[in-house]
Image (cartoon, rainbow, N blue to C red; front, side, top):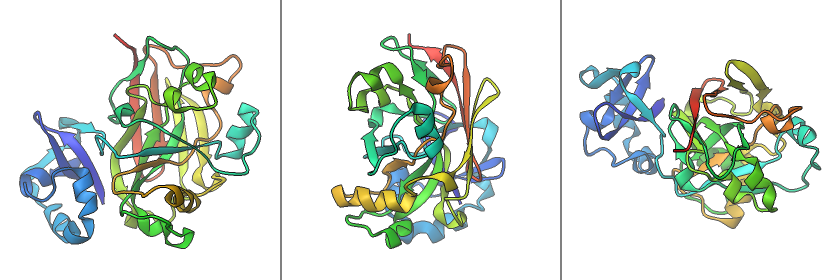
Amino acid sequence: MKLATFQADSADELGVVDGQHIISLTRAAPRLASGMIDLISRWTEIQGEVRKLASDAGHKFAIDQVQLKAPIARPGKIMAIGLNYADHIAETKAAKPENQTWFSKMPTAINGPFDPIQIPKAGQMVDYEAELVAVVGTRGRHITKDAANKAVFGYCCGNDVTERGWQKRTSQWVAGKSFDTHAPVGPWITTADEMADPHALSIRCFVNGEKRQDSNTSKLIFNIWDQIALLSQAMTLEPGDLIFTGTPSGVGMAMQPPKYLKDGDVVRVEVEKLGAIEAHCTNEK
C-alpha cells in the first residue's frame, strides 16, 4: 500500500495512492488518524479499515490534481548514515569506516517530494545524494538485527541534500546537512509488506536529465537491519522516524570540476518500486 500526505484544498490530508489516483482517508474517515505519525503508530489496529477505505471512490482525486506533501511533515528524528557505498567512499577518497558513521538532519529540513530546493544565501556548494529512506513503524530499543525488519513501516525516496562548505568546516556534519528544504522525501510511503527485499532496489539520480548516480541497494556496506540494530542501542526509535540509508557514487562534489546545484537546476531521485521525487533549485530569497 502507498500512503501519502497531500493537499487538495488548503489542509493536509492522508490518502492511499492507487495508480494515478489518490483516495482521501481524511474525508472518508475523519477520525481515523490525526496525521501520518498517528496512522503509523496505530497501524496494527486500523490497517484493516484503511484497506477497506482504499476502495472508496467517493473521495478520489487524480494525482495531478493534488499537491503531494512530505509524507511525514515533522519526524521526531531524521538519522542518516554516511559513507555506506564503497564506490562513494572511493570517489570521496575517504577511508572505509570500520563502524557506522551517523549524523542527523534537523526536522526543519524536511521538504515535499516536488517542492523547490533552496540554494542558501549562506553557502553555494549544494550537492545531491539519492537515498532509500526507511520509515520506522514501531517504538523500540535494543532491536536485534533479526527483528529489525519488523521495526520498519515502509520506505520512500529521499535526497540527502548537503551544503558541502558547511559540512567540511568541522568534523560534525549536522549544520551542513540541515539547511531548510534539504531533506526532500516521498512521494509517498510504500508499506514494508510490498517490499520483498529492500536490499535489491535500483537507485538513480538525474540533474537536468543527466544521469549522475546509478546503483543498487544491494551494495550497501551496512544494510538496513545493521543500521536499525546499532541505532536502537543508543536511542529509542519511534514511529515516523526516518533513516536515510546512504548514497552511492556520482555526487557533484566528486566530479572534476565539482558540479554543485544552482538556481534553475532540476534534480530527480528514483528508487525502484518507490517512485520518484523531483525538485527545481531556487536561490533563497
